[in-house]
Image (cartoon, each protein chain N blue to C red):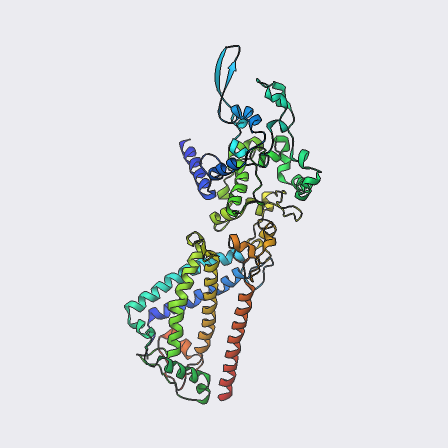
Length: 329
Length: 207
């Protein structure tokens, strides 16, 4: 038993070191940006939302129990705790809580039947709306419908499992630091795939050791820090920026030269958004050079030509030398 | 004349084999594509063998430098300033046309002078400049976390790679020329035999 605990601890420690994630679960290293964003952004519904955050903004809350005639302190159920800073950095930071949740929640104690209310999904707001047409939400949904995740819907899987309504923020479009984006995006996957408590809520499968499963991958640590899980685990879709068709593990990319080649897969996935800004100083897949270096994908056509010319000249000189040697005999 | 001691021959043989492995695997990595070409080793295998060969080559290089420090072999690589350029031109002229006219070798091989001036210069440039740069940049690529992020505005890892492939290319070209010049001995195969037996065969007019 103790050995199992120690093994679990070592595994989690390894995972957190490899993925550079904090020991307290899969919390992103966002404390630095939290302050900046929460100071910069002032929600028009800040006061309204505070009515909810007063209890849901932390683990402990207090209320007046009129029957007992006194203040009662209680612990908030962890799934009902919403991090203010993360919320005010998220895509939905402009929202009032009651935009999505029933206005009856302003009453306390909350009416019990409200728990049975159906939650919105992404398409309820983002689907078939010209305002969001450029993001192709319908195409994202089509992609998702082919994903292995869609089979888990009966177990409770939904868009929110990856894109938390209270904390998700788009990263690939507005991130200047690709490493942060990769870390953020990979943590989305790891929230379930490296946390068996979460994983068990949706699957009956046995616990997976991600590091062991990727033993075959050379320079594992470097790959985990420099590309997203979805680079290998999704089917690229040219219409949308981020592929949502998560493929079965047997179909994951395993051939190195899918990325390590002139026609690198990364150009249609990780670097898709930035590829228009491709550098033009002779490098193929130059945009990759701005952030990283991928052997086989980064080649310089000038160096290629120069080396070929030098090589041919050397062979030519040797050929001429051989000719005159034979002639002089 | 016994000119190539056993340790030099072993180092040379291992160096040659490892360098060939590194050229083939290096080209396979650099020019890998989604279609696996017949002549190119698969990327994963190329990476594995390139790393193994590189580490062995580094150990072999340390062996070579140590051997040159602690034995007399190092003296063959010392370039004399006196008449350096004149001797270099003399040797170049011999290779360029003197050799075809049957002229005598301007710097015949002796126990005191294993290399002619042109050989000496190219060997020193290859073994003491290009090789260390190749090894250092190779370790930078093997352990990218030790490479500085940016240098004068350019990615450190990109610069490291450019140094690595450039040195790799120059040494590959050197190897081709080296192999060719080794056919310039008393007979086309005499110098190859020398590197196996250790005995330098006397020359009539060539290298």
